[in-house]
Image 1 (spheres, rainbow, N blue to C red):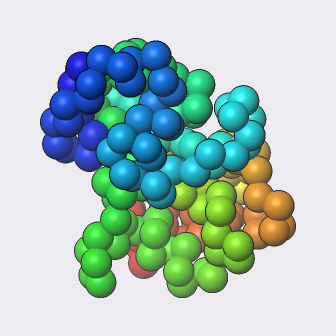
Image 2: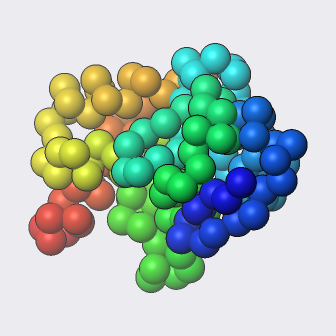
Amino acid sequence: MQLRVNGSLHEVPDRWKKETLLTVLREHLGLVGTKFGCGDGACGACTVHVEGGVVRSCQMRASGAEALEIVTIEGLVGTGADLHPVQQAWLDERVAQCGFCQAGQIMQAVALLKENPAPDEQAIVEHMNRNLCRCGTQARVQKAIQRAARELRGQS
């Protein structure tokens, strides 16, 4: 089986086919930015993009992702000035506390801004309600998304 993750093709032994995409990403490919949270797809800690759409990787079998483009939080990460605008906004707004949910939150926010480059507060709340944060950083998440949206539209 082959998986295309973050622009690279990876050979995955057939014994991993029945595992979740999350397990293969973390345990076989060593991409540990995607977190295991609830295991039921409800918390969003395992959010990745598959073919540009948001997917809870704990709910998808690895075999179902074969030949599809998968992007994890590691696929967004740059260094210095190369950070994705959402990542930079997260830093600027000091969103993270414990950090556990942040990769999933960022992936969810990136998907929102692809779909809606100028979301209002209601759109942000509705879209981000799919990801849980026990630290209560939702207000900072909203500010970070608004900041990233302005940056992506060239209105920084």
